[in-house]
Amino acid sequence: MHHEYVDRTVIVTGAVRGIGRAIAHAFASRGALVIAADIVEDELGDVAATLGADASGRIETMLTDVTDAASVAALVAHAEAQSTHGAVDVLVHSAGGVRGRSKQPIESVSEEDWQAVQDVNVRGAFLCSRAVVPGMKRTGSGRIVIISSRAGLGVSLTGIASYGTAKAAQIGMVRQLAQELGASGITVNSVAPGFMRTNPDSERQWQSYSESEQRAVLARVAMRRMGTPEDITNAVLFFAGDASSWVTGQTLAVTGSP
Image (cartoon, rainbow, N blue to C red; front, side, top):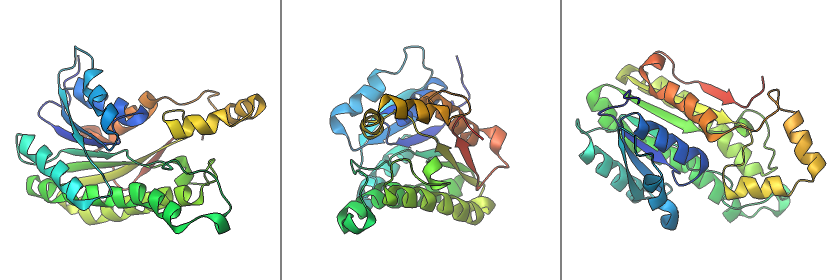
């Protein structure tokens, strides 16, 4: 049993599925109080229900729209009220994705479709980070980890321009906030996963490929396998822990390839 995060309060957004749920479970299994936030209300309770019985921490769930400032403020206020020292120790912004959008030529993309992807990925990361920083400054420490994407370092396999743009913007924000908040003892880093079948949108994309196209996707991965939520979780735990106290503004690509 792990106890590295005893008495730590952790917010994980996008916690219902895949990467977000694995991250929430990892922190709770290591002693943390995890506030698992998501907008998918009918699946939110499963995040706590599926936590292993041997976990040394616990998970509380909270319905949250990360694109709404009031909803985010309520989330952070609740987490701070549960904390032993009145502050969030770790924020992991995992909410994001393509929001059900599909590839279109740029001239066919509506403003609404473009903005929906920007809002959850970029606005959500901004609102959540802004909300936790005052408490972190009071305690003189904190960890912010944004789940970006390999698409933010290159181009998106989805072909959805707004998604690749949003993920690149997240990485830029990480660098900017790291510079600003370093003197307050707060680190800001990003984990950039490669393509993974961890949510309905990515699964739909995978199923749209022929068998030969699926084999080609895996052949481009040096490790010749698809990543798992646990692969991403391991990187998040590093950025959130004491071992990374002098690492900030970095994006770690977890893709199975150089």
